[in-house]
Length: 320
Ligand code: NAP
Image (tube, rainbow, N blue to C red):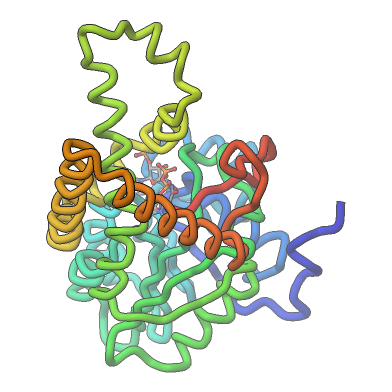
């Protein structure tokens, strides 16, 4: 199979890359950084000794630490890949140890709250260029990662207004070399867009799977046995990491509540159509929604393959 990532870069983009939190996203970044030669020295940091041991076994990094403050000394790029709720405390730990000229970034699925929690801890001369790779799977941990996770997926950068343009360009080059398509937007706009495209869909999946599990008149075994009729696809999303998703809803509260309000109004309209037998209304809506899927396929964000385009290879990432 041809290597979708292409050959390594002629020159590394960074001298010392530190990844804090070597889970699905952090380990995928280390893997693609090694394959593409994105940095001369790769450093992995995790608070969990088991994860550190696994990162050594998998040989994902040149150096492995359980102490983020010690790890970041001399780094020119630090990417925080912990759950959103932990990013502020990691920024506080590393702040005094960052070198002038360093770039601090993250991969959190929420941007406004992350920017607010990182910025107070960064010394002068350090640039903050937050990022969100819109790519993921429902699996966690260092074994779940793979080098092509970001390939042809969007990565959204949300630089602060006063960010050094050279740092923004450097992060753009980094994510492009990892295979991503890069877009820049404000943290607030990011949070609104992702609330409707990712956060509310996850909430709906958690809710519908929870409701089915609680139904008394339908047994659990029937829910599992007849799950092919749409429910199964919700269960994949509802299997996503509980810590990560708890943090997303707690840190993107306003945008999620805003989109949920709109969703509830539209659900009430659907309920009315069903009650009053408005077949045309239902048909019109379902025709419009079909078009949305067609556009997603046309833009290369999904395949036309049946079974919701899910493949059995580890490349079968979803957007989160
Ligand atoms: P993950 O697989 O659970 O990995 C997170 C890692 O961070 C774990 O090893 C965790 O250790 C470690 N960690 C937690 N707190 C830490 C701390 N204070 N210091 C050092 N390490 C710490 O999670 P993930 O799926 O990679 O997600 C990481 C980030 O990426 C999140 O902010 C998420 O919003 C974002 N993101 C995820 C996806 C996705 O699909 N998963 C997609 C895009 C963006 P413990 O196991 O000990 O807690």
